[in-house]
Image: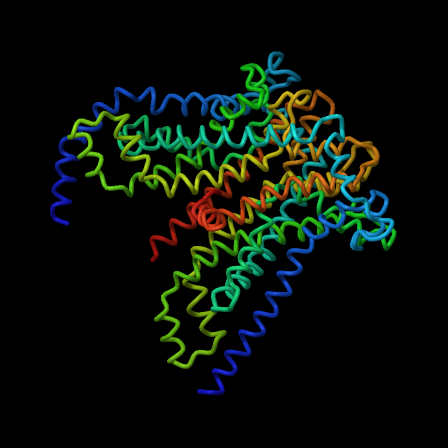
Length: 284
Length: 308
């Protein structure tokens, strides 16, 4: 018995060591970004893995340069990214939860048709609709950061409605019935009774939508009027893609700036994020 | 419980009238916004996309029906065929590597090791970084290594392939790990205990008790990584953008590390303007492929549920 306990302890120690090594390897790419954002451009390619010491040290010059790099202020891209993510997520959460409640409770033929159409939309890849969608958006003048959330609501409705309908069906009807008998209209029933109960799913869906919209590249690239509006992924792709000689130091500085808020957000809501991802795993 | 059932029956026989009837009056408010956006953002572009795949066009206005010509051209296009096989190979290799590694990590993390939470946090982190940014981070790292040998990730397609595999492993292992951890934690403790008492070794327990019990998670993760592999775009664009290129004897170019989604994008936006119809036909083929995988997953998981 003692022997097997010792073996068990040894096994655990080995696993811990393996995991620690893998963990360090996992962090290395991000550390590489950090050290290279403080290096002069010429050294990024030749001494990628060296610490930015001596003549390589560029201080914060890369960050200052990156801010106005590519004739477009970086803070503006960051601002538009934030606007689009916040508005799209808010719009999706509000309207899809309303529609999902209606679909789950009224349950008419029309509702079922909409529901299946939503499920169907989850398996359609973006490339299928990208050309026609960008033309439609152009025609309807939806090509600004203030109106693109409507596109996100349309294209992202599938998963959200799927998750909300699933959750609403698990809520007992009696609560809503009681509210209705007490004289609550549908609007009040929804906003003061149902909506608060949806909180766990609201968080899960919210997290998934935030992660999707913030990192999305192709949809805003094709829909937005690029002469006026960029988002962070578009900005970074633009720097690397359309320049003959790229200032890698400045690009790394911008990449670092764009990762920092994401990592802070992750560390703050880690529990919800991991739960949300596990809940959304049904997405095909 | 009984009370509950009675209420439910009453609700059903009344057709849920206290709520349903007034709700229908407000249908325009509950369903309207989503329906309008859904038509703009999905239904209309989808229908138009199907229609345009049978047309010759450069703008939507000048579309002329030509039948199956675009599909024939798409199937004859050597670059499309190449990108299909390249994508399929990539999807299968990444599927195996990601799932095996993610399962191992998840298994280790559910053994009650100290610091499991910290490990989990770190492994999941790359998922929050967008594909474009990931691609550039790794292109810098690979070039930092390869430049010592006087080469670059853009010069040899095998570097591009394995580079993308490493990138995707780095990003996706954490995601699949989360799903596997949830599956592993749901394995009944007493079953493992019983196996131990019956004298099963660790391997036997893993193989005959744990793995059959996490089959649903394995199915989900397998299909998820397969469809992710097929739909990959951002990382592909940012890491190699299809380079290196090979010029064929007939003058056409094959981009050796170009995957399906990028091939469709390039056919739409960087080839000659006359090829938009072909690009839309390719997109429809791509859609059928991806949707087929999704439906197969659904059928597969349904079957499993029935068996249980």
